[in-house]
Length: 78
Image (cartoon, rainbow, N blue to C red; front, side, top):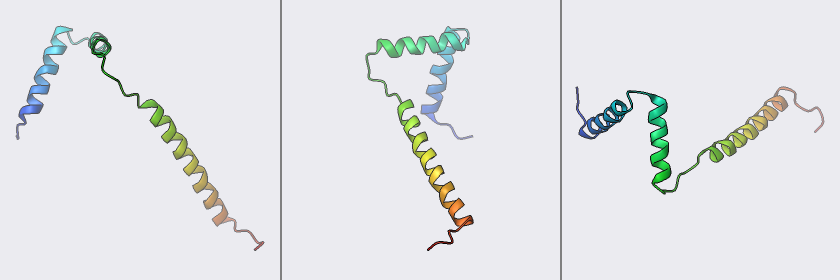
């Protein structure tokens, strides 16, 4: 199997972190959140983009449904 040194290093670091917290996901996640807060780095929140994308997708869906309905039931008035 092909080995990737970078991935091997990431897996090693992840395994060491998991051992420190006895593989407790909640404790590991809390630690990541604390490190994120302590870093003072800007954090990107993608939820707003997902919501607006959902709205745009919903609008497109409505438009497509309208076109489909019009195509099935063409107007007799022209």
